Length: 132
Image 1 (tube, one colour):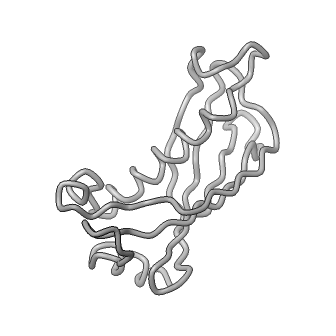
Image 2: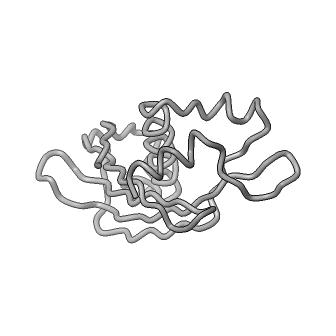
Image 3: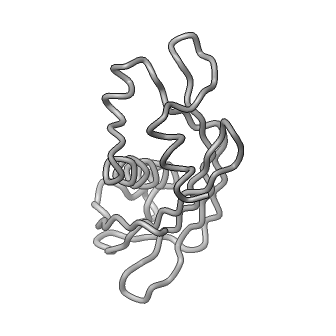
């Protein structure tokens, strides 16, 4: 199951070299993950209110090409179950103009309860069981 979120580079996201600053890609990826969760009935903000925190425990990013001002692109999100307590998102940033891959990422996460102990709440567990 692949989910996509559309974006357009804003001028202020670029550095002095005229390309998207590497740190901005983290924002694109995070927003796409949140949209994926929301589209599948998981409210990230409500989880936090319920003292359930989804946390990133590892990020791997392979930068292929640089996005530039006004580039239109999308982030493809593919969920993957890693283990009983870990899940991952394979994410790809693709420039729309030529469908060129700009970045590949793997973001691994879990959730923790109010005591900081890893566990998966039913809505996350069910979401990743459905795709396993």
